[in-house]
Length: 316
Image (cartoon, rainbow, N blue to C red):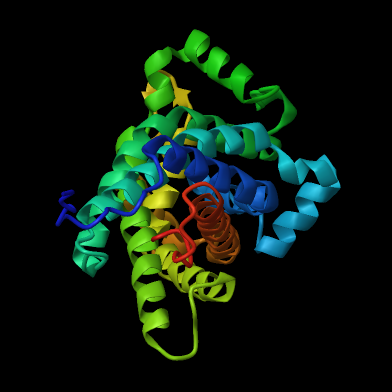
């Protein structure tokens, strides 16, 4: 006589390497749409640096100036670096977050907000370490067009940037600003991933939404707004440190706190949120597109590979 097992069959889960692959692919796909906004955000954050007059009075002025001086494709300067950044940073952070999220969830019940924030910070810190070299290349490539021709670095693509930075400034320069980058990533991921999960959970608790693209869109927009407000001061410190030059053997800034102090003293407190519009315009759609792509890829994998049609989205 056969004895049936009393243990319930565990549902199949998405393999870890697939989670990492989907995370990076979703981020890269989103970057194709928002790279111009990232460039404008970086230009706005560097505008007024060193006590100079601001290059751009507004985001719209920045767009007009870039198109006029660098051409329409100038808005896509640094695209290769943006894609590599997503391939490294987002692949790791989304893979780590979704893996920890699933591990901590008990009996299908998601972790609370503080646990989500904690695993978001962990995922962000790990991802930022791997993504910093591409981040530095991205900052420099998007900033190059604002400099006089004689001062431009003229990187041809992200790989040229990585090779030249290593050769001309040393390999450790690829991790310049790593601490504020990790700090920003921890803030961004704690805010973005946790607020997305929490917003989605709240939205689904109402009778107006089901787990579909509309739900993912609304949760993503909420997440993008929360993340923008929380992370901009850290982001502007990171941007200026990674773009700084060494003058007479001395760096322009001693660290993130020095950047923030000088920005507040020379440009005013609200300059810490300079470029808010392009930052949110970039982060909002990037958040929306990343989560929508990720949720749909996870859903298709569950349905067509794992044959699990009970899952509405990607499990975030």
